[in-house]
Image 1 (tube, rainbow, N blue to C red):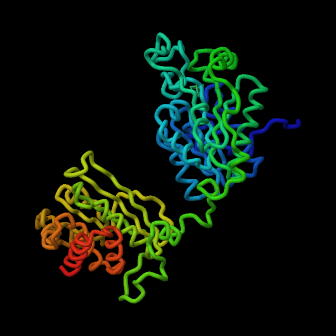
Image 2: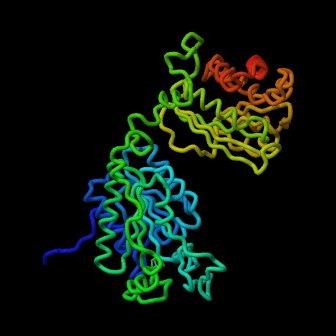
Image 3: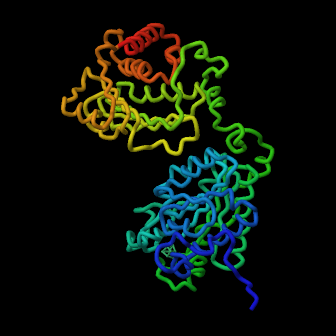
Length: 484
Ligand code: SF4
């Protein structure tokens, strides 16, 4: 018998990631619109020859397991964060394609900030926004797109304008921003509209492929389960309840102007992106050839990911110390990530940052075990010293940290080198009590000469330009740490 319909090549033949014996069917309820939208996206990715270079971002919601189905790169995002994840992927791999797929609870409630800012930045990604006017996966609670008088588990008497406000029209909202290139709302309520949705999705993906910029397709989609209607009545439900409020059509199309645009994030190519040299230029650091360090003594090289955790009180320059290390790394043609974590208070609260330096691309800015810990106060020492790798270094501000002899023995057993320095006292001696971070930097570079001290001095001069006294204090602080 001739096979007329078949699964798109954009899907796995067998959903091998799906638990259980059934590796063929999706997790969606019968009559759900997600399956239709998935099919349209999968077919478009194949037809536009984009599949192999696409990362599909699964959101939190009913489509949380979309990665079971799409035969391309897949990643799961935290609730509402798909556009932020999409931004990261696109900027790291600007010649790849990214589909950020989200439902209404995910995009229009929990992730409002992410979608607005990704759209406003004009990220060259495609967002497929599935609007079924309800939180599906969690059992039918009111979503921002729930209609007036619509009954949900959290609005049992129906949504009211006075109590819950009006349903949010996402397509119109995004279309008011200056950067998006293409914004359209479509519907799945009958075949002709499914075909229009098909065209819209193709258009959006094609624009992304052509580097034109941000595109968003809002699709009015069925959720018979939470609307409490039969699957074959769900199209009618859209027509009766959703279409009177949600107009269909194109709300923004600046694709022609986008064609003429050059430069900017939308057309950024991998060749001019994320190269350490370019990055150095951008942040105003001299290029390698201009760097001073060639005339100075030998230094250690970083030939793996060097994971450094710096922790202390807010106000001790914890985060700035991490930034300096990153700037030194960039200046020396390494790659660097800096990941801060703030306590609730700026001064006196806790702060820490994770820094990764590497001679190759860095897989993640987050780690559990560090190669180096810089502990600037006792709580940080107590909290993070168990997470230093064997053969690692623990720099500790011994002005305010005491280490019990038993614990010193334990550190030795774990092959961790404890390097103590009276950072607070030496900073005071340098004339600037806030420079204990720079004292410790001196000690680090004396112990582990990854970078030349002259590079540190030029960074200090740039940071405190026109503040001669601060330059002197910090150079002295570094020197005291270096010589201690
Ligand atoms: S709850 Fe609704 S949106 Fe979720 S899978 Fe079922 S029909 Fe689809």
